[in-house]
Length: 359
Image (cartoon, rainbow, N blue to C red; front, side, top):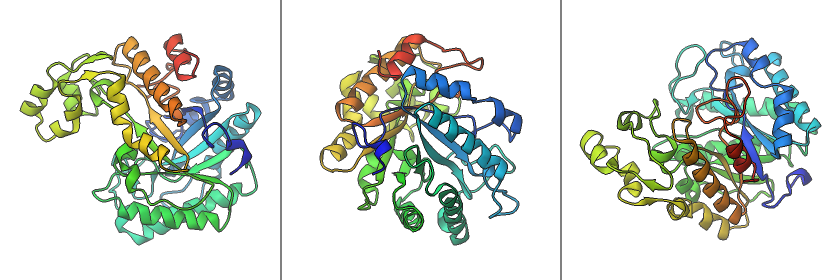
């Protein structure tokens, strides 16, 4: 494994996502790309004590959607710049394809027309996905070896994860034909769900690790979230630690199809032990394999009470540290979960200290 990634869990320890910069932007706007994240942000991230950033990128930043296979130097320039800033600040960078040709975990992109999630049924789109990674791999082959890692695709959502297992394996094999040492990170199905770790195809490769995302229980992390209709309509402030009063009755009456998704939170104390129970698949994976494991996203929405955000985050980090699982908080700036606001001001110093492992 590249020596720069040999840390407590053979991977990365304390990170933060740069969401909203080159992915999930409101519109394709170079002024936004040039100003949303700057060198000063990377300096502050390093000063706070982070050792890496996860950089989500939507494919239209890198590839001309009207001319597949035509890659955009203007887009790669943002990645080059971020890599230089990271190198100057002793930070590592995970490059994550957040939306790919024919696939968006939100089902629509903020650029151009909405896309149908046809990647896993269309061989030509699968080849285009592999070709995109070919372009990225060749560009950085032999460079930033102790800085840059590749994450193949964010939050796959399929009824059956087998097509993603096949495509990820093909992509890994292609990358390895160009770069045998680059750290590659792969997640599972159902939004990188922790309980999908057991269904990932494991590849015997010392420079490969597996990732999951953690937002459990949703009644805490996504309370009042406008993009989760049952949480928006429930419209209740839920404290952590605490109880989800009225949640079972509400869902069984108003959203019975969603009730099973939240059942683990019904009539239970929302506390550290519940988080341990939710994280059990990751704990089991880590205990029974020699493979490094990484939590690429976790956090609590800014509609929750600040003390709830702090308490939940502290407990999750404590559990991840106990099992030597590295992490990246979602997210650094804005994006409903941010550590800093639109003016670059920290939303709460205690929350920052907790996320950085100092609280």
